[in-house]
Length: 344
Image 1: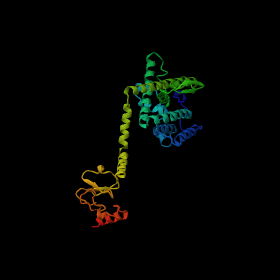
Image 2: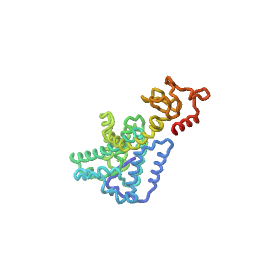
Image 3: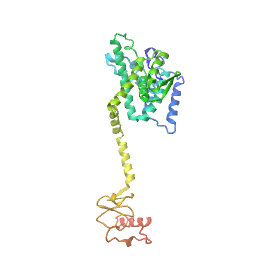
Image 4: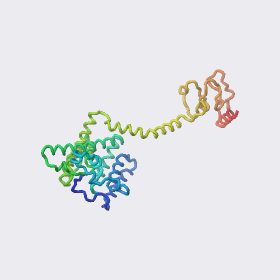
């Protein structure tokens, strides 16, 4: 269960002694990715690693990464001062080991299912869209409450954590599900699980960001509506697919060359050897030797590779190729004639 902590619960961020939850999280990841036949989705693994490294801040990362106070999501600072660092980085920061553990456990379960079903590129684009939508909706709701006469409690609240995106992912995952889930002894249809969890978290875990979780649910609904409206890949998916194709083009080009060389045989002179094809597959202007499969020019009636006479020609010299009366040449005979041909 993910939770987005408010400003009053910042103690214990990073660098402290592990309470045993991080090793347990690592064990869960190893079990999921180490199972025989596991899909091992890479984007989910990258998200898990990014969140864990930002929390642990090992080595030089401690001096490079901004502090949690610098990136905590605050609607007032983002809207009035354009502090976009808080907008984009706050989901990847966590305030305690338990906060990170529950969020990453949820990400591991949801991410593997969604990425395996959608594919890595579409899943990555979905996470990016959900992150932007959940953060943006939080800004709109907090500003709207302020304009409606509410005090600045939500408008000036500080929050971090990946749970807004996780709530959105839960909506996407369970929208068309007919299953039921069990929450604290209650049986709830899976498609309403996110709403029930929203209420239960507020009851049992005071201090969490209600707007952050609610915005995640709304972001998931907006994403599904956009998918239905666009009736195809969203622009972010198309962009990421194009980038992936450009980045992997050299690898695919090398693979195509290797496949082509392997499937078509090796080229020598004007012909090629090593591939059995029918006569209609032979390129125009060439004839294929039935003995060694070398492609020869139609201007010659003797195979340039093994000296076998062209069988379909009117003055075929079959007597030069009889071996025991069966018309076949042995491997040694082909090799001898080939050497004789090239040593002239």
